[in-house]
Image (cartoon, rainbow, N blue to C red):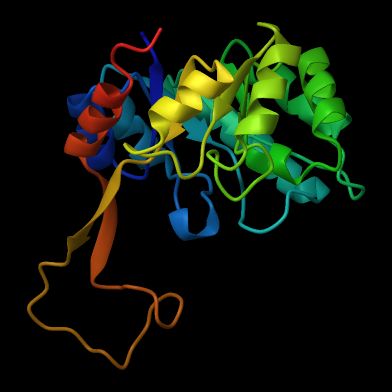
Length: 248
């Protein structure tokens, strides 16, 4: 089958690796340990220049919840302007109300500001109180796709809800499963849900080339690996593609 593979990437090197592995699209974000935040304009500009893939830009001003202040929404609107000027294919964001429902008013503002770019509502969807109400709200707002793990820790565990969402959406929007999708489970997820796209990471760890390190100092979260970086492995993207070959 012709499954669309969207790969999460945090750098131009990872975007190139995704393309080499056979990806169709990349989602650029920073701070992967926080679930992804807005990448730098330089990262986005270079990725758009380096790859022929469709490039999505995450619009998320911080980690944590998806209940944003007015200033944070203004920041997101400015970042959308930057995204449009850089020539990306689309943007990715998600806003919720205090009661766990989609913030339709603010989401609508961001969608309007984003057009004609494609719009993905990210896994803020998995934090909504009622996924079926959220689905209809987002369809009404006109989002192009919804990234979800089926409100479970992984898309594999979320198969039952993802399947229901696909059936209810019925081509009114694209349901994009993501989180924990790898070479061992992608075929099952696709065959059991009927999705046509998948969001994957295909990552591996690359050790630092530093010959001197200071184990007493942490520039980030204490205990987090500081002398290695997470990057896309093109061989894993190829393996993901191969795993779904032959599916109907």
